[in-house]
Length: 190
Length: 298
Image (cartoon, rainbow over all chains, first blue to last red; front, side, top):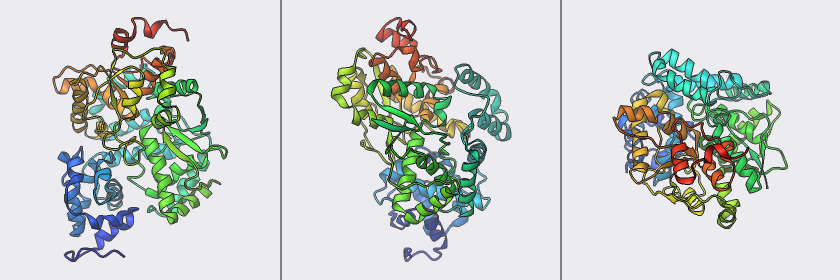
């Protein structure tokens, strides 16, 4: 077990994050340098930058972290991960926080979870992503007004053969779904 | 040389121009691309946000489907490449997780031995396995006068790359060999906003604006992509970004394999030109020839 910094009173959240992230134990080496925050393209839109978030995790501020929009602003550009002088897998920690906040029902600040769930729902069903299905479902249920703005763009994509109105499916859907079911049984944490 | 080919979902429709140009270029350069039979979606960034073991198992199915006589896989999509290599490393570096993933795969009668397949991005394959001398020799239509801004984006060069992660140069070098004028600009590895165009579009628009301005203000007349998400964001949203910021933007966004194919003498219509929203025709015809995109036989 990793020893948390001596100043931390409640390390349970820190350990929860670590156990959810492969290589996550590096997080205890965060020295608050801010390379992650300075590298993040979406930093300005976050409730807390990654640097602040790591301080909050170390301080055991579970609710504050999990209800923030920070991890949902992360688009996995990996700039933080490649620049962290302490080799903390920042992007993977963001993924872990997304998963925990979803499980706890605390991911209510953005439409990102809805997009993710619509996307993987289609993957589970067809084995391939389905852009028209994703866009129509996601916008209809989350941003119906945006559909008007997206219409002309969708049409241009369609006329150029860049969008199909029908999903493409893999042949061995049963096999993929059996793998998915087994993976779920084995537990979400890798 | 034979490679397993993982096109990924985007290349079926949205990035069809990438798929057709990759296949044409590979063929001309003497690579055999063997499409993985019945491959499935890699889950992009969306599955890891919800369930890590399922995300990894879904990706690993593709690795397990690689034919036993093939030990290299090539992926043109940045997100697919990143996910495939991420899972291979995850299984290698965390054996207990690797076993769990194989337990899930076993439910579909599959197995993957971590490290068995070398996963590569198409840019690295061309840069390393063909190289400068052979490429220079094969140029039949030098790109003289074309000012290209190579755009690497994120997941081709982060977190795992054979190039320099902060200042990659492989696409720059490649296009120098082809006779193009290569534009150096600071945003070449910056993020295009990814799926933020769907979630919080103004956030993405600012990133797209910065990128386009960075390249165009240094003289680029075409931006080259190695990722379907980058191409989509910079191309399809360019008009709305220009309107939003009340600025004048009209720069074609092409896949680097399309323009590479032109230089290698492949007939233009078969490289997927015309699928881009911001037409590349005026720029290409002004620099490379007035009838370039119509006349060539197929």
